[in-house]
Amino acid sequence: MRIDRFKERDILKKIEPYRESKEAVIITGMRRTGKTTLLRYLYKETESENKLLLDLENPLNRKYFEEENFDKIQASLGILGINFSEPSYVFLDEIQLFKNIPKIVKYFIDHFQTKFFLTGSTNYYSRKMFEESLAGRKIVFELFPLTFKEFVAFTDRGINLPSQKNNVSRPIFEKLSTLYDEYIMFGGFPEVVLKQSVAEKNAALDDIFRSYFNLEVIQMSNYRKSSVIRDLMLLLMNRAGERIDVQNISQELGISRATTYSYLEFLEGSYFIKLLKPYNLGSKMEIRKSNKIYVCDVGLVRHFAHAAEDCLFENSVFQNLRIRGDIKYYERKSGTHICFISKENNKIVAYDTALHPRKTDLTRLSRIAGEIKMDEFSIISKYFSDLDKTIYGFMV
Image (cartoon, rainbow, N blue to C red):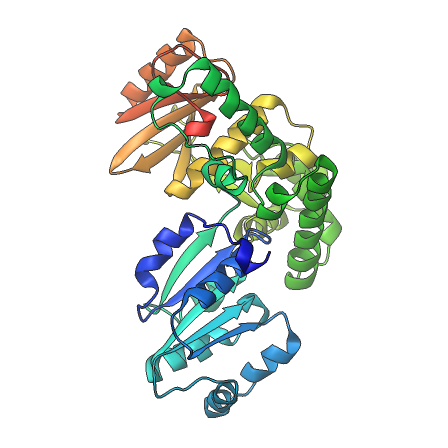
């Protein structure tokens, strides 16, 4: 995507306070979510001539950092135009491809007025790379596929989303619901959203899956049975929104429980999936160990899995809630559950999802939310509803 077509992401507001701070800004996330575009935009908007942008996917650019002597690295960057006697800015893309980068970044932060902006496609490796060497010297931001709000902005529809359900008449609902159906159908990867035809969008989803599998699973990981990971990915997409049964998955794939846990950790660390932990108050009636599975993008689920409408809707809601911070789910052994529990503005909020919420659904949610002391609760409805305490997917 060219910079002259740059469409602002909500993450920019979070990054802005750290544009001139000493810490390295690290932007991580699933492949093809727009990290490179964002990095180039930050480079372009940095008001200094003393700056450098390098893509570490280019092996020639990696050579500048392969010296063990940091003075030689400094000399190389100097030849490329960086003046280390003044404040300087270095932008590095795809840092997961060069594992010595953290030590180099630490050295230049400690010895010079160098500000780093870094991107990496996987937290699985960068977390381990940066945990110790850059302690106290980094700020990490996660970039996900587009929220619905960002999706609307990307499509240039000129629509302002309502914040109050009372403002949503049936005609307004129909208009926004049509857009939300498109969001559920194709998801929030920027390049997919910007494609014009259905065929182009589906081809882009195929390419995103292929790119992730080839570059993360085959190239970056040390796993020998890549075909098993592929089968696991497909299996998980078909079980989005469900609790994970590791024993069952292990038997289906013919691998050990330890191997299954290792693969799940990798898929979550590389942003393909998210495992939601259960929210509990210590009661024996509650599910306390099993995690629920969600996929990074509802478009991938729709394209590669035989998912029901309610499953796709729930995954799309997760996709929008996750940017608010840590979310969990609540479930009792009896089957009574709440889809999402989110901490927002020092309040604990419970959200259930339903295609067509009924009054009994609201009564049940109200009762459970009261029992576990939620500050607020709502049912997120896909279709038009006259019930109180309901909102729509496009309002999340």
